[in-house]
Image (cartoon, rainbow, N blue to C red; front, side, top):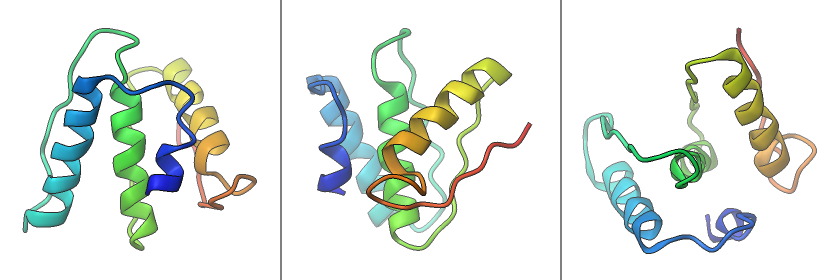
Length: 99
């Protein structure tokens, strides 16, 4: 998980660090599925919070999905996922885009 975090090209903000920790705690200690909503303005790192949670999930043998409200945003997220954790990258996770 630390190796994946190091692929983030920006320095995380204190709020992002807090979100990373809270989401990880939810994933590790809760017995039921997580239902947390991360909200914020455009460009404030919500996608990075989601990607780290997805990576943790997949690294532990589970499946994950990332939903987007538009096809354009879904395609952008898909390219980001491929670069960061996809089959051709250092982590080799199987990825797909559903439309």
